[in-house]
Length: 381
Image (tube, rainbow, N blue to C red; front, top):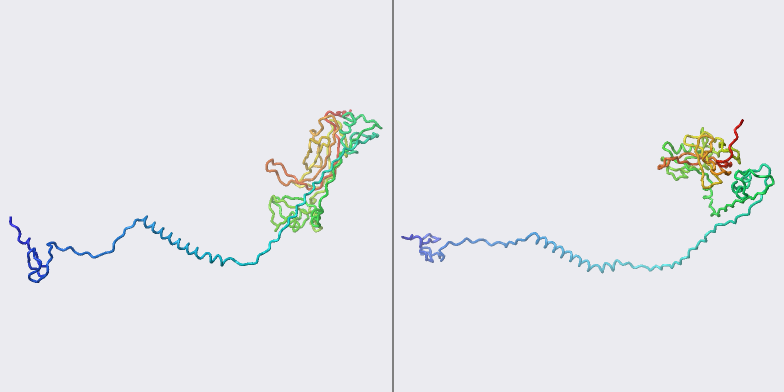
């Protein structure tokens, strides 16, 4: 196999003359040739080294730089702080604090309630026409106490003129303890008669003023109202002492009403028959309004455990319910009175009316009533 003669030749890079592969210098142009038969590699320009950083490393470097900066700032502040603190301390004059001596509080001495010694019985001689009821009413005691003390019959029908009876004396009531003296303003306030009025949805301050004969300014002053606005359910104090002659009279009596005048039965009347019907009657105080009534109070003074019975009527009479009759064959004393009242609302739970006084209470009367086993009335022939 023959070889190619050009494989052992090379060209001069300057003039292109074919030279032997081992020639180091061109014989034509004198150019020095490279000893390596391979072509020279291109020379690449130099560049900056590349540094690759991961994201966590970048964040760590940022935090480190911030921490170093914060430390530098803190150190600078600590170095200047003593001088500023010294400059901020003011120089002033010392103030002497006085010594306070505490005075011991005076201990109030409790007020002793008075006690009463039972009084001895009184002796009374029965006169003509006397009954246990009339004697009890004269001495302000109960007929039952006279009957028990003297061992009389339950009907007390064995009294004889000249008979000696032992009368128990009632226990005196303790007088009220003295109160502190009021100043002139408080005395005037206490002396002023006032009633409480509950505003309804149809009321106005001017209407209430005309109804009671008290000026609007007086009502505002007594209730601390800034203006004439009122609302349903609001409670107002009506100063009746501020009523003047300039008030316009209305068709009905201006509340409060006068105290009712009691008519029947006569004071001290006794009812001894089981057929007796007791009717209480009194004089009218005027035309009542739709929300007004008479409150009739009946109290069994001989049996205080029963409490009091109250009935609300618009008529001027009331038949005493038979269930109030004493359950024993003995005379009981009943006290009764009448008061004009006005309904101001209803109880939210029971629905019962709420009543307030609308006038003065009547004088109190008494009547006697024998128990349910008393004598029956004899029918008329």
